[in-house]
Length: 201
Image 1 (cartoon, one colour):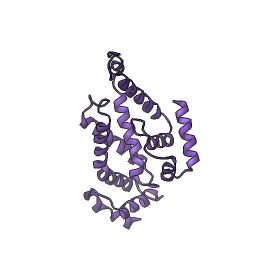
Image 2 (cartoon, one colour):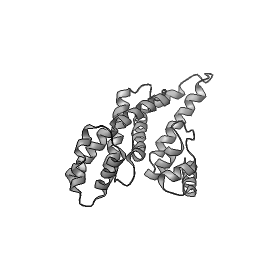
Image 3 (tube, helix red, strand yellow):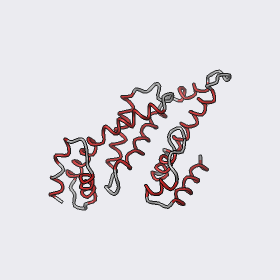
Image 4 (cartoon, one colour):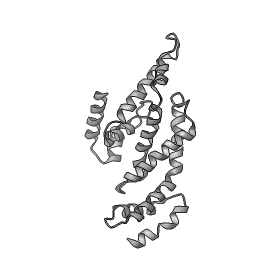
């Protein structure tokens, strides 16, 4: 355990973790005798190694949702994304791959940022000419925002399944079988959970 821990020190400056290094980190996180100092060091290593990925997700999020993010700077979104990354690292137990674990936390923080605007700003979407060809699109975007806001209140597993099934525009991006394989549950379990979520929206 002690040897494994000290072999990780050079990683802090590499900004990239290979498969073997990720495996060592997971072993340390799962080890019952790890110290608080060791745990804190691991958290710093993970944050530095995945920070660029979080920034990239914030950039892609704004690119996909230009209308909803038009009043939010890229810097603000990057901060939210990195905060989501840090929260995922704090809760990460080393039983899976962080790159599969952290996106949900990152997306949750980005959605919180969108929904943190005063209600008046959201209501302005309705204050448009009903004859405008853009009216239905803007109304649908508000509906999307409300759906994701509701999903963010669900348990973590439900959020993860929904986020893996749909992108922010609510377009399907994975099959139930693909999701089941990634999270380690049966395809029937995924189908029922999605049905339960959709019915409650």
